[in-house]
Image (tube, rainbow, N blue to C red; front, top):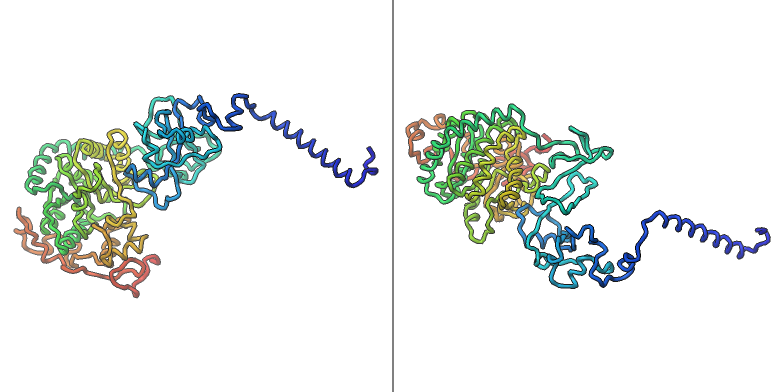
Length: 551
């Protein structure tokens, strides 16, 4: 054909025809590369399936997947209290429920068909948690997020021996290093972060040896220790015991707790202190607190204060936290454990003894940190309540026998949380973390990051039962923060002192019935407020103080 003889219209039509032929040829070539669709598959794709078959849940996965529905996450977690701290601001988020058998699907036939995706024109059904689970005899709960914001996948493998643990695989080097997308997927500790930090490492030989020495002493003396402690607990005649432990380096915090509690009129007859040295024993008894001291076990614990969170002194004192809880729990007493850096606004035992409180084996203050090593609970192990039963007794025996990990990980909290997860799975231990959003049990998170919450606490408008000065590096800062927020009641002349340096009433201090001889010397009836930093919460304005953030 001679193109020059064609009109413009004819030329345009010629070009369009050639273009269509080329596109058609390309589509035909592409279709050859795609998997063919069999005749029996075509009706499922093209229109509604009336045979009760599903295009999504095929025969090859029907042995473990027969349907899927959505449930509002908040509704699910309110209907079933999994005990974990809920993530706030999830109003528009849903959870998925996968059904293992057709019989587990909701009773409504239309809903069941929609759950099986028999009609691809219908969306995945959104149900209430009650309706979605009405025919579930059992339910496995998987809590998931995406720490490190990785390209995360899930593999659900049916027809296998049932596992109640989640394997984690990551593209990484063999021994250490960050996520590397060029590496093959490898089985990985759940505490190996995408940045390459390994939070869970086996204890070294030095950790094991140190632990075995302490454990040998404990086991050798256990019968005598329990007998003496049982006699003391019977004499205290309390259903629930408030348990603390402290060394002399942190004794000012213990004394401030006692002084502030007395100033607010609390009866501390149910408080039992496990001092790690004689100096702290005399100070505690001098303030009218009951003590139980076992020199052979506590001899290895330093008297000095920890310089920072997680240092060697801090870690050594953690063994005392294990012992005091394990012993009281083992003897059959419910207990509230708290660190010394706690003050009371209301008696916390009133909260835990309230019959309307949902019953769990153990309750924790929410730490607020969401580091991977604290998953899935983020329990603050400086304030928690334990019901004594066979399950919690086994938990704290396991904690005692695993204390070499405290030295290896420099954290009592990390070890206990890992055991909470395991014992929940194996023993059915029920764990409740009070969410950080609730007002009753605030701590360092609120102090350092939630200014409005602290304003309510300082003004007396909060529902808070206690305040825990967590999230603070050392004692020096804790004292300053307490002083500034109006929660310091310990007189200056008693800070950093031993009992004999405060008063010469030695016979009273060392006697069997102290009666609180140090109280009149050390405790103020009113808070001793001092400004330190203009950018930290304060009972009074501190405009002339420096900024802590600029130090």
